Image (cartoon, rainbow, N blue to C red; front, side, top):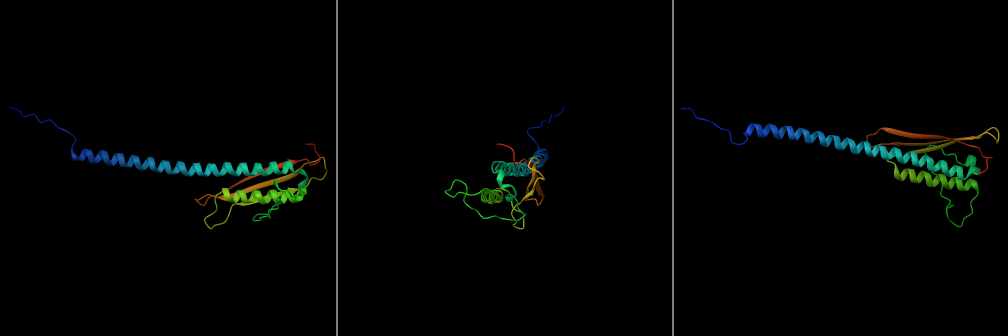
Length: 166
């Protein structure tokens, strides 16, 4: 007479193997989530940098007589002149300085600072055209460091004919 042995339930070894496989899978998902968050933060910073550079380009276009006043060396922080919406009547050069001051402060408040505590760097270069029928050249740069210490920058080159009608 033969005795039949039937298994009831899962053995201890099978349960531990399943638990290890599940734990490894969960660690992989967690690592993927962390990388996704890092990439998302970096993409958001790049999008902001593009928007900030375009914002200053729009300010320059709207104040085309400010011309060479839209020059900003790396690390400069111009003084605010309260030209925007205030009772002060600013000339084009003052408006350019106020635009730059507001722009630099906005960039520094929004983009990440580097590990040493340095703010994002901004600069604007201006090359005046040889004739009024030729375009002035502007180069707007935003440079910042992500938390992983990798540096990024975005540069926009713009041409503006100052004699052109609006």
